Image (cartoon, rainbow, N blue to C red; front, side, top):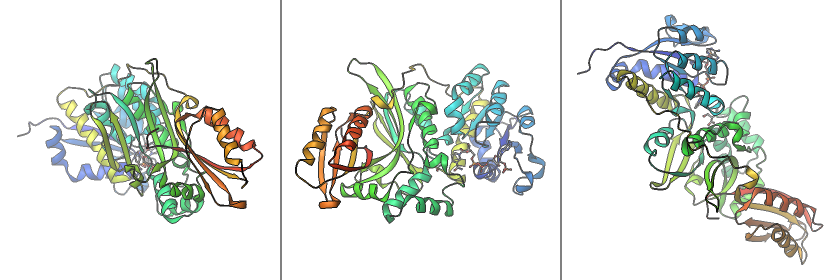
Length: 434
Ligand code: NDP
Ligand code: HSE
């Protein structure tokens, strides 16, 4: 029997793809929410920009004045507007008046997370954001809570659905980047302005959030090295295929331990070749999947829908239930943990393996000149293979792990060799021993 209790009053900011699903699901099952939280959950207002576009929202709830809604009689603010402003000011305002916050706003958290955590701490409020990374997939709570007693060494995964759709389609159809991006737009995967997705900004924001939680360190989006997918050609996929690999846009957050025992964090987003046998290679369409490696737990994999209204709403509502429960018992959820404050390692010092495709002249001595150049720069070769003959002669070199800076100098020098016609592509290799 649930004790009668005052409702938990919720302000919903934004009622677009995600917000409209949050509202629908909340309205569909009020008794369940009351039973799960210990109090009824009542939406007291819905802030939007264009109220006439929202017939799904009861008229008495609609407002364009998000600030007034936040300042009103509410316990929890659910922010689903997106972007930096006005979301940042609205959430700070809520937290500073002791109101808890649920948000899916990765861009905001990756830039201003510490400011929001500090405001939450100072005013005894909660901030939950499970939906900000990998949509429906429970990933942040496992990092923040379930694995809080373990030591995480690596988080690697596919955290952007749009680019995964594009790369999977290019791989299976052999089509070019531009036409696949156009198709992704037609099918509703890519947004009208796909920059944040295809240039890796969205994945970098998510990597910043993952690295911060995994390594108890403040990592912002600008700390994350980032490359997008617009340079990926069908030729890169053909080269990958010839070595039984495919190409995925990966977010990688790693604890790097130097020989002297000092530790740093590497956070990076780039397209990389991975073996087809790797579990991430089989993640198709707009799905997300993330590998977590922890010292005691070993390897864990999280997989599911990383975007879309209903899947993302599921994560938002899970957070809302958690926050509401905390209010009912006058408790608080986990706070920011940034005690380790490890330095962020520059990409130039981060070792990775590389796949390099080089068009060369087809004559004796070419291979030894190319190999000697790798050797001069201290980059060790793992695989070398010649494909084609005559004018089509092409060398594929896969290296052992080497720092980015050493690899860049090697490639610059190779490009200048008279026997080299063109360095066709340089792609990182992940997901196999170094
Ligand atoms: P939408 O663009 O679909 O919706 C944004 C909503 O915010 C709209 O209802 C809009 O009003 C409203 N809005 C915009 N500006 C204001 C303002 N100044 N005051 C009040 N309301 C405003 O975004 P999404 O639902 O796709 O995304 C919401 C958040 O969720 C973002 O942070 C996003 O990154 C995150 N997210 C989204 C996912 C997805 O699959 N879509 C997945 C994971 C996270 P109106 O409708 O009137 O224009
Ligand atoms: N644009 C994002 C994606 C939405 O494609 O993954 C989910 O964060």
